[in-house]
Length: 219
Image (cartoon, rainbow, N blue to C red; front, top):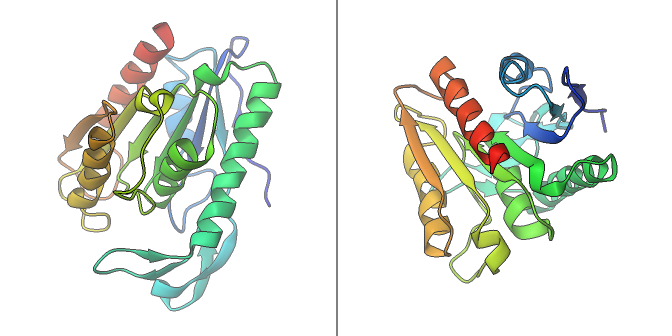
């Protein structure tokens, strides 16, 4: 497993964002975003992990950085659940490392784009047992959310910011909205925001994320 890219803040760190990239990208993909956010989050450490390189069935079995194999695209994503669990465990380990370094888990945030967001959803709501600062779900979906799952009170209080492009043809807005609706049905109060974009990230979106993180950290 590759070591994560760690961007230290200019001030003594008292918060952390663990940010997972999407399929086929790498740990440097969101480095410019982290650098931009640190302009307003001067005491927040960013941890950018690297997905393992492994075959992806829907891409002809070609090996690329991926948090889990995608076996089929429709009617809904068919995925390698074991690989998803392994990636979620990687996230849990990173949370524990940040906690053990002195960061209050209530000031640790999980962020993920596309496939990385699916891992973040699973880690935050299905695997991590302690408190967290919140979840940033960018252009993503939640393949492990199911109707027969109930959430404890502490998970219902977890802040979630869902951001999606209304022209996204890779992860359809309806897939992102389904995760948002599931969270609402389980007693959570997620925030949903759409942007005039495809499967990408816009400067306005980063600005909004910065405002959201500042608001959460000031509570």
